[in-house]
Image (tube, rainbow, N blue to C red):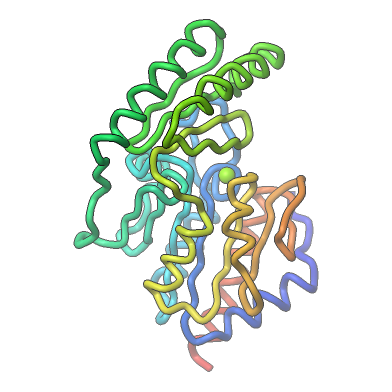
Length: 261
Ligand SMILES: [Mg+2]
């Protein structure tokens, strides 16, 4: 599985690693972890988890996970180091340390979430193999475990029911349709971490369409990496989570040299 990294990517990583304050932010599912059918079975590849731990220990270097998962679910599968900042629910939930404020919904947001949950539950009841996931600020229809026709008709039914609800923010990913009652995306999430850490360069990698919001915020010396196929705003592409292990290992070496320089 180990194809070599492109010279262009290696060179960009080298430049970013020489920056003063570095933020390494990564999507989890499909990026740190191979995609799995059961969300709770996802785990980071050991090589990526180890490299991220090493990066977190380096001076002027912050690590973060930016996931569509609810924070609780992200913690469960990622077992992040306490130094690693967390963005969950595509930016609706943020953990930047013990002093950060937890998410609280307004009464009207809670009402929108209740109506949306009812709507998705009806769709799931009528479409075998689909699943509902409730998050603190949203509800998700998962269609990965349904057959293709059922998945398509469930997504269509859910989309039409949910767009009728005011105050609902819809986003689609790979085999998921998600409603959030908080306007959030990974771009805003990444931007908030950039400001919080005062990063002078950001490295971000992600595999899904929702990661494009974050990738679009990047400009050199930032490094945006798309994992796998599909349209992207990223300047660099790798084939798989396995190849991310190589990227992160290189980055550990380069950043070690960078903080010493
Ligand atoms: Mg992903």
